[in-house]
Image (cartoon, rainbow, N blue to C red; front, side, top):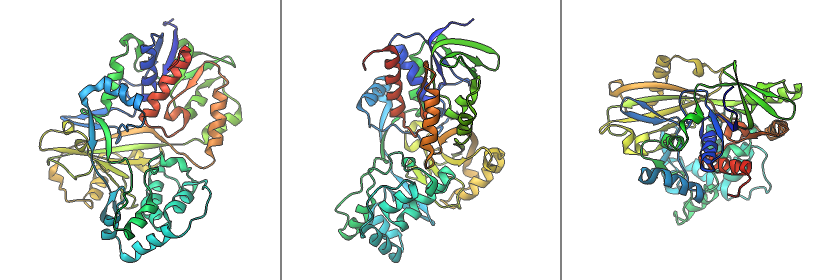
Length: 444
């Protein structure tokens, strides 16, 4: 029988790595189980020849001073301060993001512009909206919300915005006062829209450097790769052991679970009540297909990211790693990564790489001049369980599942997928520290 660790950590993504890192710092007895051959989950940096790209347009925002200080201590001078703009590409035009009054004035039809001003200056009904569509419209007016927020959200989440929770904003709109945009247009931009999208921290060799630095602090013998959890065996009140790879049993005293909450419920043995299983089946996650083009030119655009709300484009976002760090591509060359969100049953999820390349490249040529001869390499990457789909009313279902899993006294949930919450890296790192400290019964 393998060593019975005090803490068995399920999953080697950022949430699991954070838990393992803080368990190591506190000198606790732990083991980390990862289903693949690499740690980092959906926060890895991949290589394609001499090009590097992340599994998503990840950034570290300095929103938690303690987390930032800890990451700085790990990366030192390799943690860069980046100031790179972003834009929205809509109706064949580029719009500054965050939205800027003079840019809107130059780009929009005067009639549309006046409609936006009128909608934002007109008194809005008080009270909070239960869905994202109502929230965006009440805050920013129908015209602006439709063009830049609702259409994009529908593509990203695969759901009508009226069925999405306001939590899908993920805190991104808190500094984006679009009512002030309308006032700025009348007062010649004396006020500035505030937003943090263009300023962030980023490791010199990709966001995966953070995961690599965390992993380097762990004792290698405590990491078990290619160990997929296939069963959570319980006695009604406690998890007593794990089934791994359909055969091997691993015992433990406490279990830190970062696996998707719906999967965790299905892995329980004996199975949970029928109503709990039904609740788990209603949970949905959004997958992500990445298409990576390596290009024989210094840069593709001046932006770190470009957003695409229009339905004509199969992708929602383009990001250029070299705009985050020049180390991400060879001199004189660059790479662009296009994100295509989808569900497992959508055609894009199973589309062959060559067909994906043709489909995406045809749309890419509408964004800017690019020839097939400039493409020196191409690859695709498929990421399951990339985003939890936060539908309205789903908080009750999630609470039901979290409460049920909470009946197992030695099972602890952490991470975006396990808690079904839209969390950022600084949230995951802080939560891992606090969870492990609670298990060890020490102050943080």
